[in-house]
Amino acid sequence: MRSALFAATAFFSLAVTGQPVLAAEAPYVDDRSDAEAVIRSFYSAINRQEFARAWDYFGDTKPAKDFDAFVKGYDGTERVDVKTGGVSDDGAAGSIYYNVPVAIRATAKDGSENVFAGCYTLRQVNAQIQEPPFRPIFIDKGALKPSKADFEDAVPESCGDGPPPPKKDAALEEAKKAFAATYGDQCDKEMPGGEPLAEPDAYSLRYKDAGAETDEPERESRLFRFFCSMAAYNESAVYYVYDDVSGVRQLQFASPELDIHYENNNSEGKVEAINVVGFETDDQLVNSEYDDATKTISSLNKWRGVGDASSAGTYLFRNGNFSLVQYDVDASYDGEINPQTVVDYNTPP
Image (tube, rainbow, N blue to C red; front, top):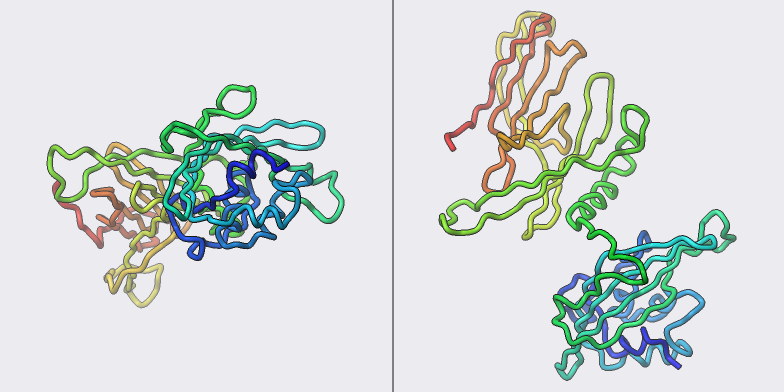
């Protein structure tokens, strides 16, 4: 007999983006880094008709009596939208079990729609006790049943007997994945004091788009600051922002390209001129912090430890974006802190 999971999903496929797409347009996803990713990967394989890959996401308990029956079960598939809820986990006998609440809205080729809801259970066997070949997280079992709820409200609050797990901060999780993918091998693996890497600093920024009417509601943007590295006297950080239109994106910071002239061409001598000859972008800021009162990110790059030579930028959040409004440079190695402003785009609010 086919499993309850297979019976509930036999005639449908999943758009892993959460938006309706045809099977031929489904992206390739093969990510076994967490339980939700395995579910997305499983349905990516179904949408692409890569049934051998889909079959392999299951453990010893398969979703059909044999592979041919599994493939045949997806005849007539058009698309499926999916939502997942908070994942809970339990450890037992050398394994971690993950429970994933799921709701799907299934659309058949004849245009009919049905909503199903239920739970997947996935398993990760302790890697230290495995023998080759290594087995990553896999689907252990699952059951989806017809639901009368609207698709938007159909995700179960929890799976298993325990209380609902705390809801994940989806924007934060997306930002953390983006940071790890880009800077996992570039940034330090621990904090300056030797402790494990901390969670990023997170801020909520409310604003209105340029030209918005006074009665239009405010929008929200999220700002995430990730520690990256610590040198002798400079600490670097990477920033990401999130909004409901663009999702998560990394901030790039404009900075002027400088042509500095010293008396007798000696950098230890008097500064004769500082000229801005262009602009470039930086993916990291040095000795930076966000001030929620002024909605600004500021940076201070010390050119040497005593800080008498440095460059400092100020980036203002307005209309949903951060932009450079001021840049100060202290190019003299004279033991004094005496910066001069080389860029000033400050404007009245």
